[in-house]
Image 1: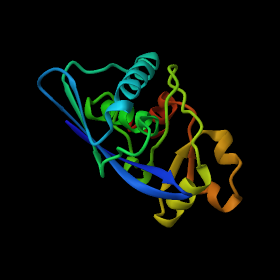
Image 2: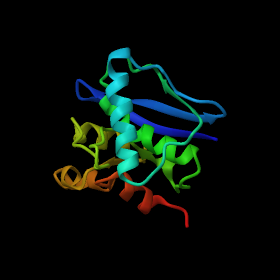
Image 3: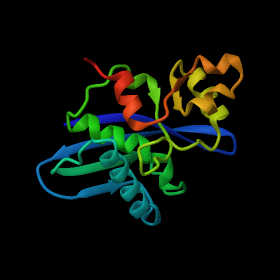
Length: 168
């Protein structure tokens, strides 16, 4: 199965879209394309640990994560959250509605909680320009100007995102 997750990175106050494509196929291993080597080990460890601590499973298949465009100039912490959601969706653990309207970015704590985003204002402005929702921790969203709050989805954990967007 496949999943396409929209993410973004912020550099110099401007957001840039990154697509995280996840595909599960028969085989073993995790393959990552488009991320620098230094970030991969921590990125994988935190993504898998957070998923498991939120009672999601890492499927026994080959997982391929492709970042488009490449994110070699960014820390892998930006992509733990969208990668975990991509694995959950691609493995059929949850079907999520309106995922194509959400911008998922950020790190996950080992307990599955979403870490603070480095520039929530730029991310929310980027979401508003595209009539999308920037997914971010509640405390960060509430600190934004009122006109930007409507373009956020206040989520504090991986589990909470799945519960809010799950197709019953």
